[in-house]
Image (cartoon, rainbow, N blue to C red; front, side):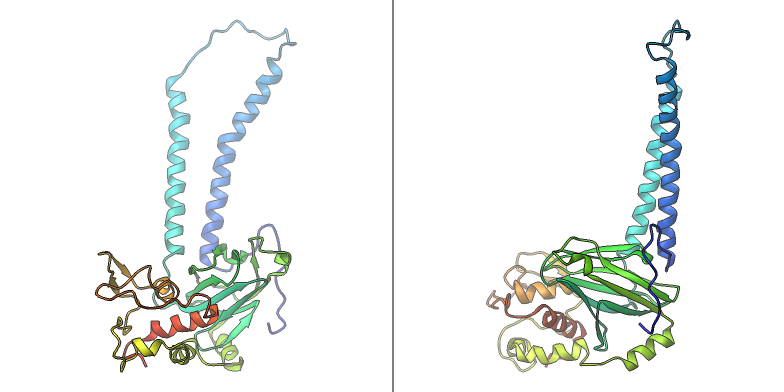
Length: 317
């Protein structure tokens, strides 16, 4: 952490990205509109409740009921249109939040009771800490090893549920150096409150220095390459295999026809399911003979295998 202090928790955390500023703007404008629409109603309600209560004999009650159709339509149509505007505004933000750019730095995360483990593409890993560069898109692919967690970074205004058996992604581009908190916001057990840490936004040069000084094992893809052989994947999917199995060359991101006549895009989830649930989505033209590896491969190894298969452009070894 280089001795940098972590910003204390506050009701309204500081902003570390342009996206966070836009989320703040939506919240502020929405709050103002809600107050504008509701406060006059409650003030008027309270005023008339006191003025016309049954014990007050000094008010004129002789006026007949009067209706103003234009006024009634106005207070129906205006809130409806405002709701649509906020819906469209929030939808645009959500689409941006779920559409990371292709050149984003990819970091994987595993949530487990009670810690976050992050792994960088070069093999650097860290627990309950995350170092990222500013002014560069960062994409985090996360999965849980046990129960439901939720990764929350207040300064970025992003929160993502992290579930077992399913990959979730978020992305951001920080623009302010500093050290901020990251938390788990899903009650996940007795020590849930201790499942947190910090995220450090660094200049690109400082981030590179951190990478150079961090303990490096094999990169995810390189470790996955070894596991590809260890778990026997190369026996069927290797270039010299005689078994009739789908080729994995460049499979990631490619359209894959399935045995049931449908097609899908091979993403991380498809590759993971093909390892653990091979009978769910069988590639067209192949028999469902692959055994399941569910319960036999730790979650971290699955991440490494997926990273290796994503990188396959030539023949799998």
